Image (cartoon, rainbow, N blue to C red; front, side):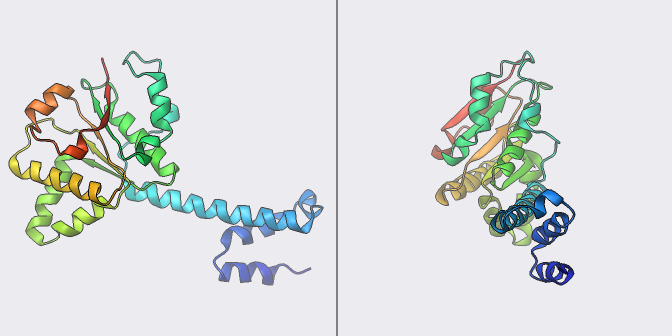
Amino acid sequence: MLIHPTTENLRNLKLFGMARAMEAQMHQAEALDLPFEDRVGLLVDAELALRENLRLKSRLKTAKIRLDACVEDVNLRAPRSLDKTLWSSLCSCQWLMLHQNILISGPTGVGKSYIACALAQKACREGHSSLYQRSSRLFHDLAVAKATGRYNKLLSLISKKALLVIDDFALETLNDEQRRDLLEITDDRYEKKVRQSSSASSLSRTGMTRLAIPQLPMQFSTAWYITLID
C-alpha cells in the first residue's frame, strides 16, 4: 500500500500529527500487527498530543514568564516556611477555578518570583492562559496606553487572561493613578468572572496594605497568603 498520497492528504488537512504517526507506524512491525481500530486510535492520540503541545507552547509564549520555573523544581526543604500541604494544594490549580488570589511576601532572595513563575507555568500546563508582568512595567504600559488611546484595549487584553502575575508588587507606594489602574484591572477581571491574580512582593502583608494600597477592592481581599522567610 502506498501511504505517501494519504500522508500528503493528512498534511493538506493540517493533520500533521496523524501524518507523522502514520509514517512511523509503517516502520514499526508491532504497530502493523495491531487491529485497525487500535491503529486509528494511535493516530488520533498523536494528533491530539501534537495540538496540545502547540497550544501549550503558545500559552507559554504569550505568558512571557520571566523565569524558567516549574512547580516540580521548587525545593520544599529550603528553610523558607513553604508548607508542603499548602504547596500541593496550590499546584492543583483549584484556586484558579475558585477565582482566588495568591499574595506572596518575604525578604529579597527567598524565591518569591520563582514560585510565582512556577505557578504561572503550571497554570499554562493545565490549560489556563497566563500573563507575567512586573508592576513597574505594568503601570508604565498602562500609562502609555492612556496617552495613545489604547487603555481600554489593554485592560481588555489583561482581563482575558486566566492568571495575572504581578511581580515586585508594592515595592514603593502606589500613586493615585496606579491605584485607580489596579482597581480597573481587578474590577474588570472580577466582572468577567475570570480567575484572579497572583502577586509576588517583598513587603509584609501588613506593610503592603498600609503602605501601598489603603483601599483594596473587595474582590481582591480573598486570597492565599504565603509568607516566606530568609
